[in-house]
Amino acid sequence: MSRFERVRGRLRRAYESGRESVRAGRADQAETSETPAVASPVSPGPVAPPSATVIGAEPAGEVHNSTSSRDDADVPHALRISAAWSWRLIVIGVVAWALLKVVGTISIVVIPLAIALLLSALLAPAVGWLLRARLPRSLATAVVLVGGLAGVIATLTLVVNEFIQGVPELSEKSSEGVRQIQNWLKTGPLHLNDSQLDRYIEEAEAWVNNNTERFTSGALSTAATLAEVLTGAILVLFATFFFLRDGNKIWRFVVRLLPVAARWKVDDAGRASWATLGAYVRATVLVAFIDAVGIGIFLIVFDIPFAFPLAALVFLSSFIPIIGATLSGGVAVLVALVDSGPGIALIILGAVIGVQQIEGHVLQPLIMGRAVAIHPLAVIIGIAAGVVLAGITGALVAVPLIAVLNTAVRRLAARTVPDTPPDAVVVAAKAP
Image 1 (tube, rainbow, N blue to C red):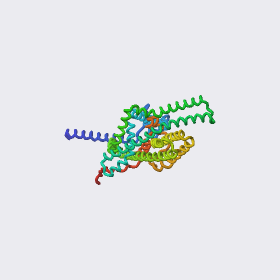
Image 2 (cartoon, rainbow, N blue to C red):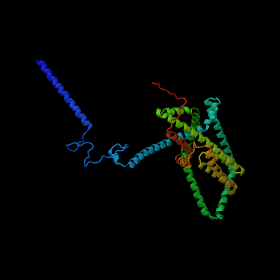
Image 3 (cartoon, rainbow, N blue to C red):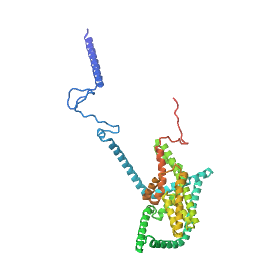
Image 4 (cartoon, one colour):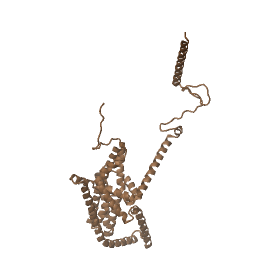
């Protein structure tokens, strides 16, 4: 055998032995991975299988799927949930507070836009009728807006003229009525003297002044100067015109700013909310008109002065549910008391209460229906919050805002898929 063959045989034996050692190492590693051993972390020693019980070791803590560490698992579950709700509510409260501060800062813009939305919801059906009559959109919007403005100006002119004509007579009767009340307080069952009457009158005047400042502070802050009033009125007119003419385009632009996955859901909720707002405003106008006509008829029958201005006051105040009709009815009763005495005043009071009962139990459920039904407690709380935040304007906007938010939240929380828009383009994949 040559030297070359001997060297080749040695290399072959070394290669075979190397392969055997590699196979043995892989087999040992496989056995180790199948039955891993647990060694003591403190000192080396014999290993124990995983199923063995180690004496003196602490049991492993239960880790809930809502926890990320052992420390969280040691906190009671109820406390973890309460803490999670608490910080989220704090964040929501801070965001709401910041939003209110921003709205308060630019209230001279927000309030006219809110009024413009209400007017747009009221006048939108009239624009739709003119569009179906083949009028251009801009012309139809202008006709409806100018016609509504002319009607408001004519109504205000009649109210002011009648009020100016009847003020002298009402002032004389008011003085006579006040003297009659004072005499009754002195000679009646109360037997009050002059000093007590003067003190009570001063306290009543102070209470009226304080509450007048409280309820009108929000309105005065948004209309402190004539320039702000004119600016707000012009903004209402322009915003109403463009909402009526281009409202659909504006809404589509807003929806396109959202993520694609949320567009259909938000669009469905927004259109349902707009339908709710329109139904609410139109139903409120109809109910307010019926209230004004009903109370006005009683005022005319019993020859109460300022019948038309008082009916107009009832109509305007009825846009503030529950509270507005009560206050305007109280004004009508006071005028009847001063002009015609307590007997006629009681009749007018009964008429006001009867009309309000018919409104609350018959008209509103029948006209508004379930779509915009709001619990009376929510209405009262919303009006109170609106008065505190924005005065009379806040009370006017509070209930429509609650109705819109109620519809929007219900639609967003629903699990149903919104209807496909009529102008949507659906691209279907080809079958394989």
